[in-house]
Length: 401
Image 1 (cartoon, helix red, strand yellow):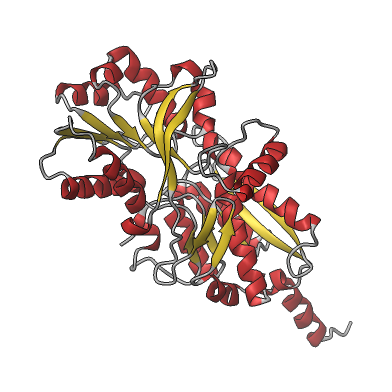
Image 2: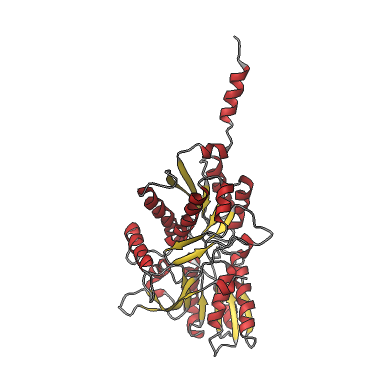
């Protein structure tokens, strides 16, 4: 039997097509979404995924991007850096996704950013906030963030607490990982600049995933702070509140607590109902109704309400929806799905997001994304859930450098 060596080599080559070539040959644009879809973080992760799915459905219904359909391929990252890396590699190497949009925690984001750099696949991070993600030493052409970061969130919170004139002693409680460390640092440093008379009397650092917050709560109460900055989030916030309430934590502090981390979102207020600690201050990426709301945002709220079958709708879909807006506008600008071309198109790109104009800064790949802040109170209409009052959109631009 005579073997044609050229045919053997050609066949072997076909089996070894580089993932970047395989991606270019598809007739769809594949977007991988690693996101926590189980465990406490799923309280945010599941509705966040809906935003990407909704955006893809809308774009596909109008003809796609560059005449190509968008496919969303979701994977459960389980809020674990290791699992996020594993599923990101799977999405890139096995599913041949063109881009990644996702991850949630500040442990996942930087870990997947490393993979994006290695594989030269763009990662748009709509949620992870740690400053480390786009810090100069970690910045590369394939990572972008369309959500707020820890500097923005910590400083925005400090701006609010600084106006509490009866506060002199402050404490913090955050999880001991990148998000908690960075946001607490940004908060404390900015608060001290604004109010040099304030003393930070206590800082508690439970690990992420802590099941028993009681020792941390008791230790904090013993230091008798006037107010607290908390970075609890998602299902972890729910657990913390349930353990803090019997210890008289909120009554002792007279609810002088600012807890960003989106615990003002409807996902949390619906979950907690009457158990929510009314009177604290928080934030959210989105809100169904507020003074000065634009017509574009009202229409978005109508669409997301219909898509998620919730009224009022989830607040987290806006995160991945906006990330997908940036991605598709860059693809159109580049007239390509090549990561290098799309990366350049993302630099300094401005879009009209549902809540207003938003720009990705060229120098640090960070969007000028602020959030809605307000005091969480009982619904005046008689419902069981907390609602946000004194709502304000905090412009992040003064806090970004």
